[in-house]
Every structure is written in structure tokens, then in C-alpha cells.
Image (cartoon, rainbow, N blue to C red; front, side):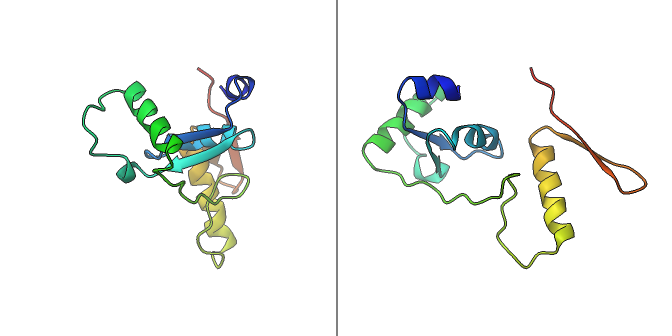
Length: 123
């Protein structure tokens, strides 16, 4: 998808923040195009939007006319956002592992404390 967008000259992508489903797509695209994460509350209550295609067209129109703002997204290279720099290293590690789990990684911790990461299976 990223290569296709770049090949077609797309410079900005807008996506609705729904659960954690936007994260992998955002991470793949963020270094190639300008990514805007949009708050769903800013776009709702619009009659006639019943399909994903209609939602995508509506998001495009809102962005074209400057009617939405990008949400602030901050994270490190593994994707864990740090809202509090005073967290302990253990807390930060647990947040990173939780983030990996949400992306489909299998995280297994042995009795000796070692952690094994298994990447998600490609569909």
C-alpha cells in the first residue's frame, strides 16, 4: 500500500482513529507520506455515511477543505507512547510489550525472566 501511494503521488493520508487498528498502517506510512490521525468525534453525525468507502471519501473531503486537524501522536521506535517520562524502566518495558501484543506479536516470558517475541503470521 505504501509503495502504491508513493507511486501515485500521494503526499498526505488521513485516517480515523478507531481502537488500535490504525497503528500498524500509520507506522508503515509515516516515513513515506504525511499521516494525519483524525478524531472520530470531529467527523461523526454526518447523514448518509454507511460504508467504509463513503467514510474514506468524507475524510478526504474534510482534509481537502481544511475542516479537520491532525491529532498529536507521540511514540518511540517501538510504538509505545510516553506520556510520563518519570515511569520506571519496568513500566516502560511492560507498555512496549503490551503494544506489541496489540499488534499481533506473541510475547512469552519464561520462568528465568527471558522474553521471546514471535512476529504475527502474515495472512
